[in-house]
Length: 430
Image (cartoon, rainbow, N blue to C red; front, side, top):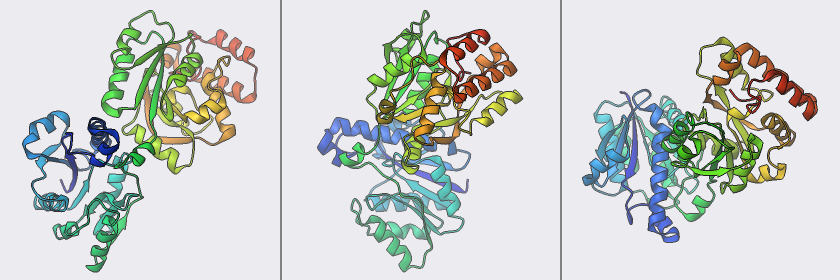
C-alpha cells in the first residue's frame, strides 16, 4: 500500500512510560494512563487499517513483541523501533516505510487523546500538496508528522526532544532546505498532571429495563472500542438478567422505573465532567469520545448529540435517520451528551414529562444550539418494526410537534396511552 501509518508505542511498564506524570501520580497510575491513551489511539485509527493505509506498530522494547501483539490486536504489522534516541527511531521507521514502497508516511505517538482517523486522513491528503505535514501540539512539540521522501528523515536529527523547541526547530530545518511544510490544527497531548486534568472525563449513563439481550453486547462494545472513564447502568426494576449481566462490566444502580428517573440517578452518581446518555441498543461510532471532547471544545459548546442510523434498508427508516441532522428531530437514542455543570443547572430531565428526551433537548435549545456530530450512532429499529414503521414515524413526529407547540403533560400522556403498545418506551426509542 502506498500509504503507511506508523504508530510509536512502548510496552506499558513502570519507569518506562509517562515519567513526568509518574512523579505526580505514582508509577502505577502513570502506566494506567499511558495504556489507556495508547489503546484509544489505536482504536481511533483502527478503521484505516487495510483500507486507507498500511498500519504499522513500531514497538519498544524489542524483546516484548509477543506481549505487544497480545495487547494490541488487529490488522497491524509490528516492528521493533530499534536502538537510539527518539530521532534515530523515527528516522529508521520512516526510511523503512519508503524502502517498502510507500509514497506517503505518517508517524504518530500515543500522547494525543484528540487524534482520530479524520486527522490522519487529512494529513495524507495534505501530503499531496506539501512535502511535509506536521500536527502541532500545544506544548511546542508535535503529535503527527507526515513525509513524502526518505530524505526528509533529516528532520529528526539534532532535535531537542521533550522541550518546547521541538516544533520550532523542525520547521526551521525544513525551511532552511526549502521543503514545503503544511500544518494541521493544533491539539493537546498528555504529558503532565496539568494536561491530564484539562482533559475532561466522560461518564456513560445507560437506563435499562429488561435489556438482557442488549446490555451485554453494549457494555462489551464500550469497553473494547471506547473505554470511557466511567459506565453506569441504572436499572428500573428489570425482571430478567439485566442486572446480573450489567454488573460484570459496569457500576449498576437501581432507580424508580422511568428513563427520566433513571438517567437523573445516574447523573447524580457520575464523576465525569461530561455525561453521555445511551440506550442499551445503541452503538457509538469509532472514536466517539474523542469526537465529543473535540466538538465541545472547538464549538465552545456544552451539549450535543450524534446523528443516527438504524442500519436497516427500510426507506422510511433511512429517511428518519436523514432527519436527525436537524435539531427538531432529536431523541434520546441519538446519544445526548452534556457537561455535568449545565445538566445540573437545567435541573436534569423532567421526571414528570412524558417525553423527557424531547423536553430536555427543547430546553437545551433555549440555552444554546447543541453540537450535532456527523458520525451516526447505530440504533436498533426494533420498536419501529414492532409497532409498524409508518405508524411509529407518524406518532413520533406528532408527539415531538406537540412538545414544541407547548401541549401540556396530560395531553401528551393521553396521546401516548392511545397510540403506544409499550408506554414505557416513549418517542425517541427505536
